[in-house]
Amino acid sequence: MTALGVHAAEPCEALIEQGNAQIDAMRRHTEAMQQGLQELNEALSRAEQRNAEQARHIDRLEAELRAQRGYEPEVQQRQRREFFRELRRQLPVSALYEVLPDRLIIASDPVFIFGKGELGAEGQERLAPVADMLQGLAQQLPAEFPWRLRIEGHSDSRPLRSNKRFETNWDLSAARSVSMLRFLV
Image (cartoon, rainbow, N blue to C red; front, side):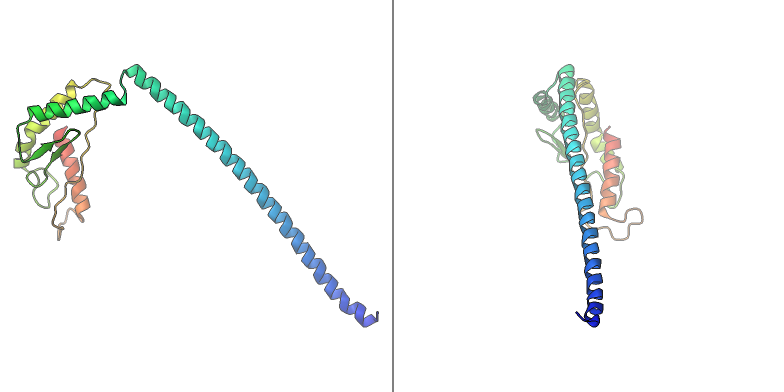
């Protein structure tokens, strides 16, 4: 080889060495990433196992609690049906509300004034027997019975235009739900 050929090969060898060094660095980086991924997968597996153990423990505790309290979901459903059956029996027939086997539906139009979040005086007067009946029946329930009152949206069917207090029907619905809850309980 001539002197010129040796000098021309030196930059190529340097580039090859540089490329090999980069490949080695990338391999080390890839191995480190794979090691980190493996450690994360192992940690995830341990966490999932702990989660499953805790879920089983919670299920056991809930079963013990139900046994101590002496009620099961079937008993709760029966008590709920009896509650609404008694409510239907005691409340007079009215277009203001409908008592179903598992809920009481109260029409919002007759009890709220358009665009207002508070119960009107007429609405309070019309709902007073319902509130009294609910409170009385709730007091008769066993202490361990999980009494819940769920209020669902009461909003106007017409969109609010220039209501300073409520920007949206959703805001109005929330205010009405709170007002209804406070009145009934």
